[in-house]
Image (cartoon, rainbow, N blue to C red; front, side, top):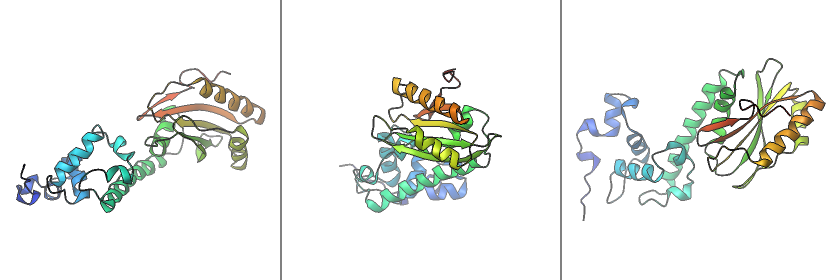
Length: 231
């Protein structure tokens, strides 16, 4: 049976906490940062080894890790409810940091601006959500609104609900967005149909639909960039 070498027995410069203090947070690997959150490992593995196991199961992808639930994390030996909650809380703080940085610049000038604004709320969702971004006459963000949440295969988008919100907020234009949890960014026939329906409704109300983004796996597809909004 493999004997676990405790982190306490490591050289100080190899211990995550000491390494962060002596160098900087940037000097630590993802596994070392996660190990600090964990605090301890299990009988067979140190906190760093356990962190590596968790990251490996998430394809070494922080976004994939953020999709895990408390129950998912508790499947790892040595992860109880408290540690699982700590991991999720830390990842949520990271998400909110990204969101707050984006909010400092609230004017939309490209599809990339919209993508960066919505990525924190859409990228790690295990199910589809449909959102709208409401803009002023000068393309400043008024707000973003969740229209619907669906299952793994889709979320509905009721034009009546969308434009009621837009009229209430005095929006000059809107941007549509939804996620594909599979990571496949190809627009489906239903995506194209609902975009056309909402765009045509907007023309009647003089509220322009500027774009529709599909977000998945930290990437996006833009109807406007692809010239698919000329309905």
